[in-house]
Image 1 (cartoon, rainbow, N blue to C red):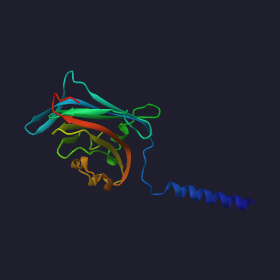
Image 2: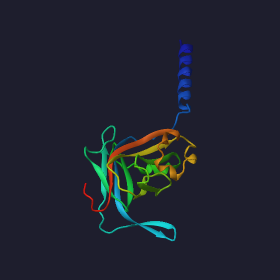
Image 3: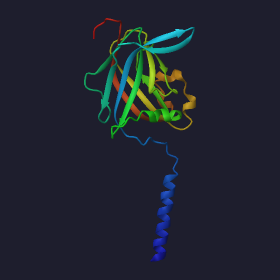
Length: 199
């Protein structure tokens, strides 16, 4: 009987050991309970080809909050951005204990990258403000559009994949070629208009 129990114990230990060594993709441990995207107008400064961004006194930010499972904005929520203006876009995520968790993406920059998809061609420009992660970015509105569904994706990449991605891939509709899984997939309505144009 003791010999049988010993053999069973060894078998269980071996199975446990194997399961820990399976080459499965790393998954973030943080479960996200809520998220938000904030768009704040900033001044884009071009100093002989060197681009920088400065806050504008008194400008109001537009904020979209996402909750539920999947994460969704309130019904009817949208952002309304003006042609010719530049906005600082900032992502905040909260775990289920209501603790900010977006810094995890920055700390693991080698396996994370955001994509901003579905904007009509040549209607906006996008610049990463961090290590090509996209927790913070600057977007400049180039052309007026009808309302459309903008999609912000935070991609958790498999090891070594990010080396194949450039900053110009920010709107690559074939982003799934960069193997991994989505940590976030936020969809919301956007509308780019000339200054003074109503909703």
